[in-house]
Length: 262
Length: 291
Image (cartoon, rainbow over all chains, first blue to last red; front, side):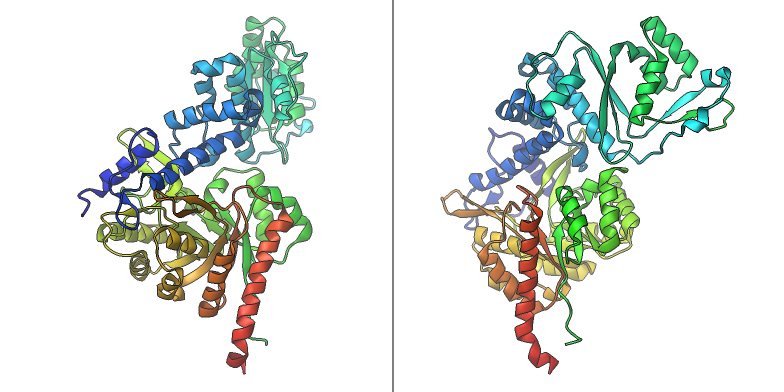
């Protein structure tokens, strides 16, 4: 039998991979020409298991929080509904946090989506371009006016994640398999991620910095970001925020208004 | 003796072995990496690859170009591969006789597996076109790997060897002979692996792959072998390897171990076994030729 349309064959093959309840394509046979559903099942299994394994390696803290069995069930559901759209499997799972936030069974662990957000950003930070190191000399003795109008140039591997839970504390415990005993779940937290040298480093900062950090990463000047930060939360403290960002290597340089890059 | 070539042995690189490799500086010729794992912009993956590149040859093995696709090649992905190849200028660049991407009406679907194609004139023309396009874009010869398969297609018009031979002739590409895949496919397709090797265009083989496989069962409860890359090379695969080395002589040989990755000494022992095998087989065959 000659296939009239090869393209349709790959369409039905691809479709059947993600519909475990349906029969495999009719043109797949064993060496004797007999139908071979179990043989097709090997591909179906390979594809799903590889996607689930990929998610397990990107989201180990999530897996530690809900246990392997439940995690793999969540990952399977995600893989069936959000299969990869690119061969760059290092970045698979970009919608996993959002999926967990919307998926009823996952909502039993209300902070799970926020932990997934941190873990995905860790992967992005890991693969991000190499960046430069901040040199404090570049801002020594600058007049206040120059600093006010300066904007921050962040390290390419810098990411951050806001949570209404203490997500960084939870993430750190889960990453090494510790219990969450003693954590104050009412405490919102911002997680900073950056890879100033070999490994991705993380740090927690107070949630009062949320609006100010949003403004700085959106490219507003220090002075404007302070305005925005203080309007949102009077406790916003630029000095404290900059100290934390610099400690993590998240700032490459201050870009001064006259174009002089310090 | 001065004519004797040292065996070129390599292993698939895993980041967890980087510290051991840096410390031991093992006696290997090359490391092979999956191209797609190095398509990020920076960070440890590239730092490690740069370090390996200082002391070893590199082989870049793509798993995402979907050369067997019925649709056009994924051009953005081909350009990513070109960027990587231009960055490292590796000794070998290879891909698979398989498909893994599919364009649906709405978007691209990547299936993350090496899926089989029917061997027909139509698919041959398609694959030849894709290999030509890749070689032209990269400006270098591509190595194409023989697949491991679990199913056959009712529409198939020719056997795998005829397909591969014709593809090689028409594109001028080189080949990876994955001996584990030969063993798997021979079992699964009820073919004779030695007959397959006798007919394989060995002159075009630029690299040999060795890996471990698992055993499952098919629809008739007969053994079905799975290309799992999760254990040591099996004895019948070593037998086939000896047979190939005797017939083809020196070929760069790679140990692949991608799942349940062992510690470095265990993986390196497999590479040593491949080296010993090659030396032994060629040592026996050589004296007359060198006399």
